[in-house]
Structures are given as structure tokens and as C-alpha cells.
Length: 244
Image (cartoon, rainbow, N blue to C red; front, top):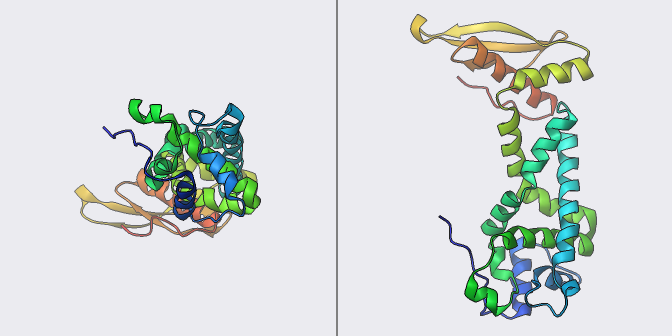
């Protein structure tokens, strides 16, 4: 089991602000904004001086940036599917995971009582959201979008693959009927191997246009992979299933 990280109490508040800027790769025009994002209520003079309000703002900004990315990058997904993927990507688990990877816990400013009793795991996700808000307040939409997608893009791909990886054909059919006014056809273009261990190569075709073919251990698998290739090419991405 992973141990709960402990904030570094050997650094001053100013040193923690500097360290956080080094970690996240963003230099604040107004470092006091970042100081607020790193300050826990256990050490703040009043609750309004802690990072709780910034967590609230950061949560909304994070959701907006991820939603915009999903909307633009995956036009074949319906509203319900996008909602499910977004909920995975912006979850407290994922925010805490990124905080742990960046070692943002070492930048937190907390009361000594929390040092002794152990830091709640929720602080990992909270500080990530607060830093998102801080970057937005200091640098605007473009700066915070760059920061979020740098760290969230791998999580977006994982969530998309986990949600739709086994259902490429259904997604391609939705996209084709909605945007291309056609229905995907799957054609066998090659097969290889002995009868007991054949591999099949299938190509997806929509309205006469063929996309990159894909190999599979059976026709069903090859069709799914061919659909996956077509989806990627329609997004302007390289097809993932190009070898046997």
C-alpha cells in the first residue's frame, strides 16, 4: 500500500512557492496567488485565506478544459458517453495520482498537527485543483489549459480506451451515419497462417472510401481493429493497428 505523503516542514512558505513553480513549470506574475493555493485551512488565519475557495474554482476549470478537449477530439461520442469519460478523468483519484507523480504534497503548507496525525489523502486532489485555479487566475485560459492537458491527456486516452476500446464498430457506425451519411462496410482483404491459427486482415469502408486495414486473430477482432483505425484517421490521428 502506498504511504500517505507528508508535506516538507523544512522549507519556508516562500521556498515552497518556489519549489511548486519549478515542479509545475509555470512562473507566477503574482506568487501570492500560488501561496493561497498551497495554504491548508489548518494553518490559515481564516477559512477564506485557505485554498478551499480555490479548490472550488479549480474543480470547475478542470471540468471545463477536459470537456472541451473531449468534445473536440471525439466527435463520435454521444453526450452520455462523454459524461462518463469526463467523470473518470477529473475524479479525485486521478487528481491525487497526478499530485503524487508531481510530488505536490511536498509544497503544501499545513499545520503541525496534521504533520503528527498524518495527511488525509484528499489533500492530494485538493491541492491539484487549487493550483489549477491559481494558474487560471494568474495566467488565464491558455496557460491553465496547457498545464491541465499536459498532465491529463494520458488520463483522457486511458479513459477513452477503457470506455470504447471494445466497441469501435458501434462508435464508427454512429459517426458515419451522423457525419458521413453512410454505413461502414468491412471487407476481407487478406488472410495468413495455417487453418488452426489463421489471421485475417479487414478494411473498413465508408461511402467508397477505405481506411487503414487491420489484422486480427479472427474476423470479429480484425473488424473491431479496422474500425479503430478508421476512427483515428477521421480524427486526424495515426491508425494504431497497422501490424499483425
